[in-house]
Amino acid sequence: MQRTIYLSLLPLFLFIFSLKTPAQEAVSAKPNDPVDKIKWMSFEQAYELNKKKPKKIFIDMYTDWCGWCKRMDATTFANPVIVEYMNKNFYNVKMNAERKDTVVIDGTTFVNPNPGSTRSSHQLAIELLRGKMSYPSFIFLNEKSQLLTVVAGYQPAKEFEAIIHYFADNAFTDQQWEEYRVKFKGKVE
Image (cartoon, rainbow, N blue to C red; front, side):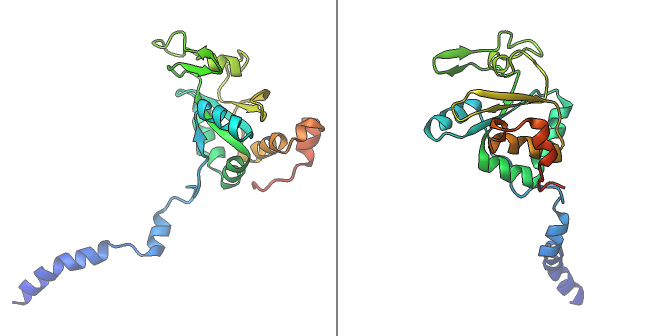
C-alpha cells in the first residue's frame, strides 16, 4: 500500500521539482540578453514614416556572409544604452545590401541586377553607399531623407555611442568630428 501511495505521488513531486523559482529563472536567463532590442524596420517603412513624422534615419547595411556585421548585432546593437538611444532618436533600418526584391521610392525603381548570383549588390544599397561597398556600413540620413554620411566598419559600443549622438544631436552642424569625439562623455562603459 505504501508503495502505491509513493507511486501515485511521484508525478506530483516531479511536477513540483520541475518548477523554477523566480530566482532560478533569473539565473537561467542570459546575462547579456537586452531587455529591449532595436526596433528595426525596412527602408521603405522608414522612408514613409519619415514623410509623416520627420526623424533621422539610421541604416545598418549588412550582408549575410559578413562576420563583423554579426558581431555588431551581438555586441554593439545589443547594448542597452545604444538600444534606448537609437529607438528614441532614429528610424532604424536593417538592410541586406544583397536583397533580391524590387524597391520603388518616389517613382524610382531599384533592383538587384543579378538576383540569382552570389554577392550581387542591390541598386538601392549601391546608391546609399555611393558605390563604396563595405560591410558593415552605417548610413545616416537627415529628416528630409538626405544623406548626411556613411560610417564604414565595425564599431564597439563605446565608440558607436559618440557617433550616434554626433548625428542625432546635430553636433555635426557646428563641430568637427575629432573635436566632438574627444569631448564626448557617454554612458557606455
